[in-house]
Length: 125
Image (cartoon, rainbow, N blue to C red; front, side, top):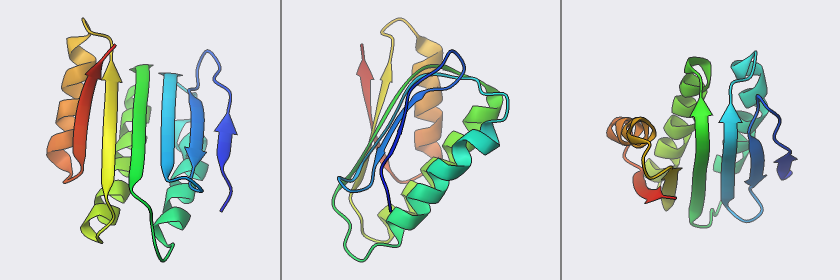
């Protein structure tokens, strides 16, 4: 499985998915025209990673400043994959970064946390 590095655009986030290190990061804005198409290879990367025999502690950093409804469904798919990994015994941590005065973004992270067993750390920036 290969690492995925994508530069951000005005509508897509910076992506640094590094299964070789057990780290996965999304940052910036996520309002792609076709979110399912954009996130498909990322979700496939997580699927391949989860099939590995011995997984290191897995760190996920979400540093999105804004995302649309279609992205929110893709994020939920990602968190469900992480939840399955955790239930299989892998240590998984999500750091959810948000602007200090952006209550909506913090609330969104808290909502995702209620849906999965993965631990979230909330980090104002």
